[in-house]
Image (cartoon, rainbow, N blue to C red):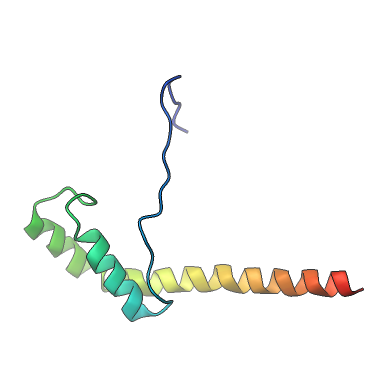
Length: 87
């Protein structure tokens, strides 16, 4: 765990998200987001090489699988809560 000095902090911000939960939409979002020079500080050629060869072919599918697991768990928990409240 990282220890912060007295005058240091952590800033969490949302830099956007895909328009919908589909491989195409996630791929498009990642392509735009990770092509931003302010997000990935590498020479453009290297940035695009890594993005197109290692990230875009695999990451959208993995992202969707994780999101679906989270949504499924949330859905099941909300159904349980509705059932308990109705008893």
